[in-house]
Image 1 (cartoon, helix red, strand yellow):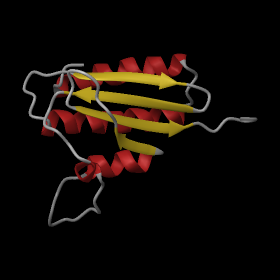
Image 2 (cartoon, rainbow, N blue to C red):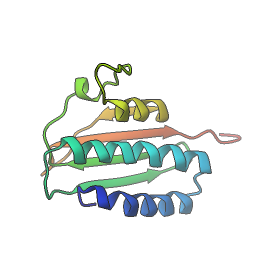
Image 3 (cartoon, rainbow, N blue to C red):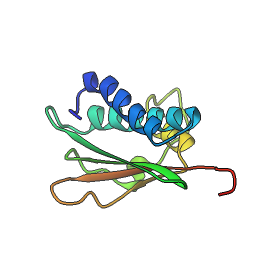
Length: 130
């Protein structure tokens, strides 16, 4: 997707269709879409990529759903990704807090060739008999 706020709506619609096709529950879709939207918004806002792109890969299995994001923005660290408690004297930081609250795992991963950052959002699925 383009690293622009205007591209977020189309991204959510496309990912929602992928998740629906993979049999994700309403709750799974809502949780992943909100966390993914927050991750992309952070990349757009803080990544320093005026006309860049964000690569998004969605993987679904019986055991988990995950989104892997890659970008060419400013490098981030595990410290950057760590959520901090809300503080009215220091606004911001809610995106990371939401991602960690919604997902079972939020972690930096190897971005692969031509990318600077890699981020994985993982949601474990609870299935009857699984």
